[in-house]
Length: 419
Image (cartoon, rainbow, N blue to C red):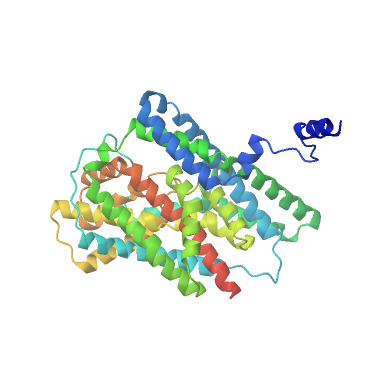
């Protein structure tokens, strides 16, 4: 009997007080980067095996990007307002060093693009654009738009994703609420925590969204169109990699006096990967906010610097504007001295700060840079058309650099202050 009882006990499932986690719980707690990699591989496989099936799957990607873009303005507005309202008088923020890093990084990126364009000169096979996009006619128009976006109707700014206006009004309301009661401030913080929780759930949809984006892009576009522009792509992406892996780490080291590469690779892996596929700095704001929180950075700093960086920290955009403009100059045989090219880099850096945080935003500023060399607008728009052709890779790499650098420089400034 003892043997039989023992056998029965061995065959019965062990009684445990805890229930094993469900598939959903395991997914929510799993590595997001690993899940995204699986999504990318599945998207490539589906596009290769069944392009007709892969194209409609793009709705998953559109859904994911639309969800990010929808929640991002609310997140920025609530977090910035709550952070300023709850800011203690003796608490220090690190916005100024972040802004210095943003400006220095963008200028260095434009200068690097000039050097790469001189060392590896590029010519274009210009094509007629299918449609003409409106582009700014001068630097005054860029600055005019930038300043007037600050005083946009706050509701309109939230609806249209005007982050300059959102930041402006959030700061104003936050300052006004500094004198509110503790109950009101606690309510604001609770709302901010609730929005952050919603954003966390949306971010966990990234593997499905990126699966749809990759499958749709490869099925409908492929990479055949990119082969004829391989040299141009190599110059563009090579410049961006140089900034990401050489000059940005130098700036971080100067700020922190620590080995910058662990932080650089973490930002590229966790922010750059999602930005590469969403191709929108604005849509990647929630991802960057979440990463800053996990890096334990100062919330009063990153709640302002991250959305601000999505608007003005545009190293990748400066590279795109400079390289494509100099490629047009080389194609037309226009002689350009080095001093003029440096002037172009300055214009590109300033113009890049006015480019929108959406896919392809920097391309519409190319005619502005081309005007420096008296290149007609219709020719400049042909260069813009080339930019849209290679945008599958160019704009993805540009956004990955821009968005990951927002977190990188914010972290560098916060850690420098802790030394």
